[in-house]
Every structure is written in structure tokens, then in C-alpha cells.
Image (tube, rainbow, N blue to C red; front, side):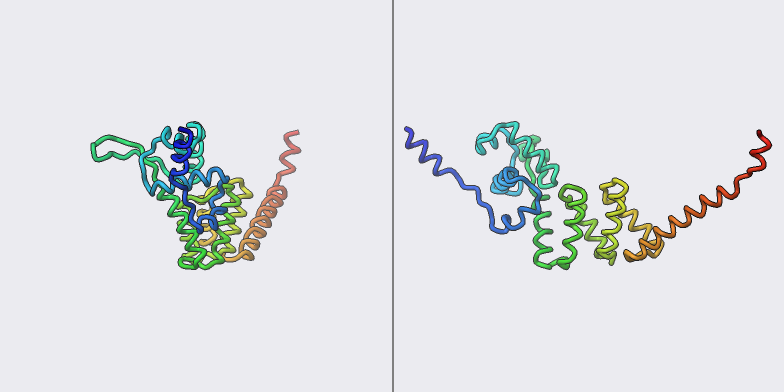
Length: 223
């Protein structure tokens, strides 16, 4: 009986991890246990019925552990749990890994220089480091659009610094900064520095003018 159980265990399906995944794994910003769980899900296909209890049984994990890992991968924009009507007109939950493949394709495209020069990858990585998380597919597209519209990598980094200085981790905020700079003809790091110095100087002169215009005589009359 014990031998039969052992044989069944040895016959269980293996989790296959492609070699390219080992190369791009660090970019996913996942713990090893989260990465292995993701690979377990990938082995089930791009989309499959979400059955947490069955997953916990197959993966030899607690139900709470499975749900926690699903939550982490969802927050990292690596999977979605969707409600879809099946062939029998019954609503069922499905795990969708489309976001994972989309993000992975972007990483691979940068590596292979198919869609963007290798120097651009620094921008994506820098934004992820400042935000403290991986970027969503939509955020990748926004940054890619900046680069394709000839906004320099240098200027994007300056806008990121400005956003970080103001405590904002939001691409919409950075996009607004780049838009305003574009209207003012700011295109380089030096332009940013000149604009900031001019702003400080104007603010200082305005403050000095306000002090100079104070009506001291009127103040004496009040006394």
C-alpha cells in the first residue's frame, strides 16, 4: 500500500520552469515561493477555472496561503481573477494570466531590442525602484509613449525626481509635469535647473517687493 502511494507521488505532473523565466524572474519582484506558485499556475494554461481548494490540495498548501499568493500576484498585475459565463450559462471564476504574459513580453522585447533601445530599459527599472513595485501593463505603455514622442530619458528622470520630491508615486502626475514642461520648452536637465532657479528668484523678488511696499506710516497711525 505504501509503495502504491509512493508510485502515485512519483507519477505526479512536474512543474516546468522555462529557462527564459529564470533569466527574467528578478524583474518580477517576487519572493521565490511566490514565483514557484506563479509557475504552478502557468503550467495550467493562460486561463483556467479558479478553484482555490483544489489548488491548495494539489500545491500542498493551506487555503489561506493560496489566497494570499493569489492576492500578491493580482496586486503585482501578474494575473486577474475574472467572472465569466460558461457554456452552460453559469457564472464561474477564472484565473487569467494575460497580464503576466504581456509584462513578460515587454521585458523580453527590451532584452532583444525589438521594440526599444536597451538604454530605455533603465527608465522602466528606475520608475519601478522609486515606486517600490512592478509597473502595470498600462504604465509600461504610458512610459513607452513618452519615449516614442521624443521625450528624453533624461527629462523623464527629472520629472520622476520632481514627483518623488513631492511624495507622489503616480504616472499621471509625472505626465502632467512633462506636459507643463513641454509647453514651456523645457527639454533637458539644464532647462529644468534654469526654470527652477528662475522660479526661486522670482519668488524671492516677489517676497522682497511685498516687504518693501509695506505702509509703515499707516502702521504708526494705528498706534
